[in-house]
Length: 146
Picture 1: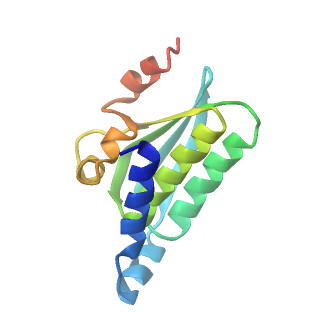
Picture 2: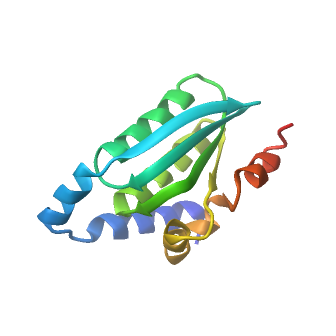
């Protein structure tokens, strides 16, 4: 199965699941903080909190889109060390960021140490799609940064 087919099937499964209204309202009220810094030619987006349906996913998507709009083929590192939870929309946001970055000729990698977020990436087999590193230092060295 190609990566594209795998991603399309996964996105279909994610959005096919029903969710109750109360859970959606709770998710909308929970935010996530992000910050961007540039190290050499890599943009590091450091996120904390919960990557869930609502403002958190919108903000992350907008940040990646803004980096891609610069017209360069960027290296983007999403540091998820301080993200405590991710839902189906959070996964879809990561997938969209990965696809969009590749379309622009860039590379998107993740920092995700052991924990719930990495567990979700493994259960959905997204750890085989994304390059996932346990530390930011290891991820940065994979970009061949000084």
